Image (tube, rainbow, N blue to C red; front, side, top):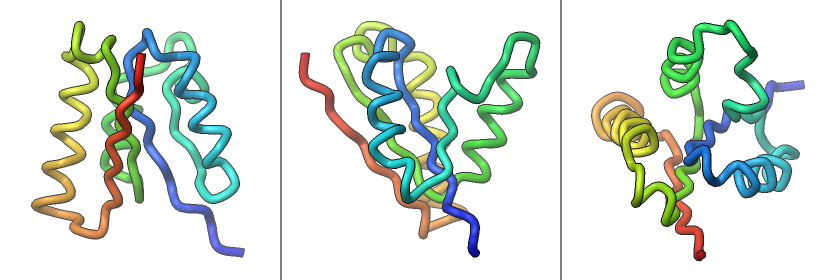
Length: 101
């Protein structure tokens, strides 16, 4: 059996109630990388995020008021994913999702 494609979910820490719901909804078709589930205390978290961004087959970027208020991490992840798609992996599926308040 072929391995499921890897899905990276980018989100604000303020959207931790929504991100797992998205992960659960997509888990049948993907192996999910979600920071809260995949990064443990003491892990080299930045390395794990960078590796997941480099290796993922698809990505969902959750955009919300929380991201607008504190855009640093999500905007950096979205930029890295966008650059990867444009320059290196045109087949990367990159899906922005606007969350309503």
